[in-house]
Image (cartoon, rainbow, N blue to C red; front, side):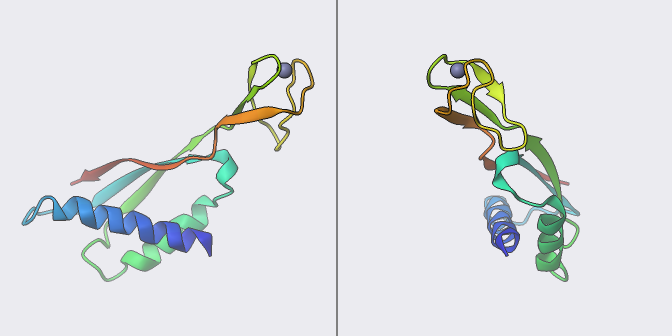
Length: 115
Ligand SMILES: [Zn+2]
């Protein structure tokens, strides 16, 4: 399960963040993620994996906030930028199939809030 591996990475990053602040007290942690629409990640699966991994750990009160990044591409012929819908990558302006994805494949932690 892809989401399980990602949840594990997120937790590692949270732990590193906490390691930079030794002795700091926290009640809960919110991790803000930016996930591209083309990643095919399922938010519910990611939440479920994350919650399973943090259960009964000091991070048990943590949660994920997911912001979806819309998929966009740029045409290599006419340079038009357009939103990708239903995995249709051809250029809507000139019909060219040679387009380049410029947004929508990302999976970033934008910030970690410690409360
Ligand atoms: Zn075009």
